[in-house]
Image (cartoon, rainbow, N blue to C red; front, side, top):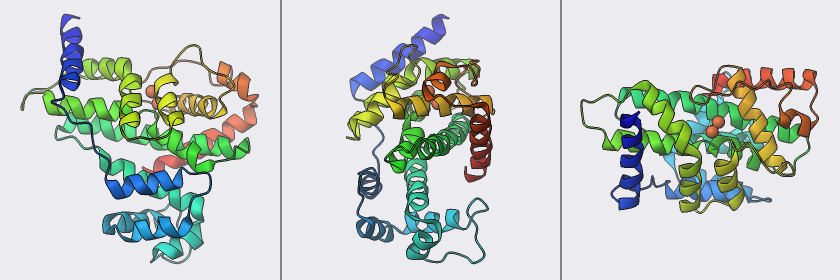
Amino acid sequence: MEKKRSLIDVIDEYVKSGKVKLPVMDQNSLMVQKEISKSEPDLDRIINLIKKDISLTTELLKISNSSFYKGLEAVKTVQEAVIRLGMVEVTNIILLVCQKNAFKAQDPILQEFMNKMWIHSVGCAVGTQWLARYYQYNNLNEAFLAGLLHDVGAFFLLSIMDQIKSKNATIPHKLIVDIVSKMHTHYGSVLLTDWSLPEQYCKIANDHHNIEFDTTNLLLVMLRFANKVCQQIGAGFIEHDDSDVFACEEAAVLDINDVTIAQLQIKMEDSLRLS
Ligand SMILES: [Fe+2]
Ligand SMILES: [Fe+2]
């Protein structure tokens, strides 16, 4: 117990001292993300930003040709990807690539946690966007990004632990889970604010586990519901939530029926192939 408290204190002090640098999002990726999250993104500008970045282009083409999206012929250019998959799917892929590159750990155990959190985040992104389509929410990219970013604080904490732990030491599994569970909402909103992302993402990062929540905030409610479904299909890992997805408050607010929930579960299970 004492040990747990001390590591939390160490992390807090370390961040406050300024010794740790908040992860810096690659500038080009950030510009792409900001353009995508606008209500009317400029397609030509996005394509030009992608083309400027060789690794982004390579990853985009790789994922466009993955089993999740694969058509009859291979996608060879950014324009072909846009034509084949449509702008919403292409922007999803770009957001995935940008985020995945932002966090890495040297320690294999912490990296394994990140991999699992990544699967969870992608599942939530796909699920929140699926719900956004179903409820005719006006911005599908925003829904995807909200899902992808809601647990960004967990990635941040894992990378801090990677920085502060001594070289050959191992942080106990339970301690990692405790720290991430307790602190990820706070640090998620700190990080997204530092990245100057719009307020709604910071709010979702901060509020997505609060017992009381704003039931009029549709984006938040959809994300919270997707988060629960993700845990229920076994892609939760760090967060423990035993709530019944069919009977939770979010399901009541969304007025979602069992058949629709089953469809959502299938879509989210399918998304595991994207990770
Ligand atoms: Fe969370
Ligand atoms: Fe989550």
